[in-house]
Length: 108
Figure 1 (tube, one colour):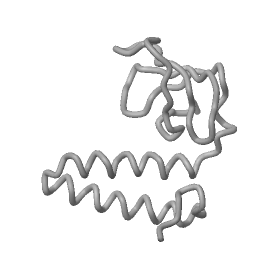
Figure 2 (spheres, rainbow, N blue to C red; figure 1 turned 90 degrees about the vertical axis):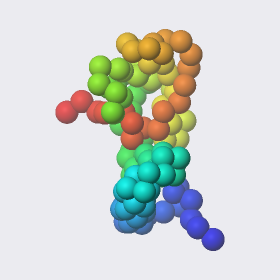
Figure 3 (cartoon, rainbow, N blue to C red; figure 1 turned 90 degrees about the horizontal axis):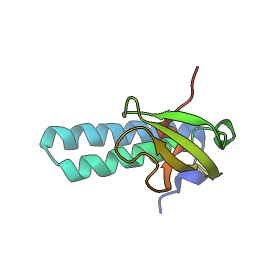
Figure 4 (tube, rainbow, N blue to C red; figure 1 turned 180 degrees about the vertical axis):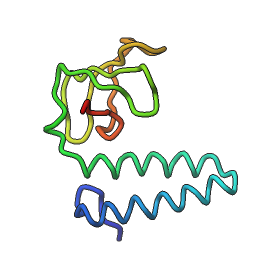
C-alpha cells in the first residue's frame, strides 16, 4: 500500500517528485494530456508537503506560480491549503477557493 504524502519524509517526497516528473515527461511526449495534467497536480501536492504552512500568513497576498500578474490573498490556512480569493485576473474575487501552498510564491 502506498504512503500518503503527509506520512512521507522530505527525502521520500523528493524521490516521489522526481518519479512523477519522469512519468509526466513521458506522458507529455506520448501526447497523453489527461495523464500529464494529473501527474502535474500530484507534483504540486507533493511539493506542498515539503513546505512549512506557517510561512504563509492570512491577510497576505502571494503571486500564483505559473500565472504572472495574478495574486492570491489568503483568508485562512487549513493544512497545506491556503483558502482565499484571487486578486487581478479573470476570477478576481469571484469566490473563495483553496490552493496548495506550493502554488504561492513567497517574496524574497
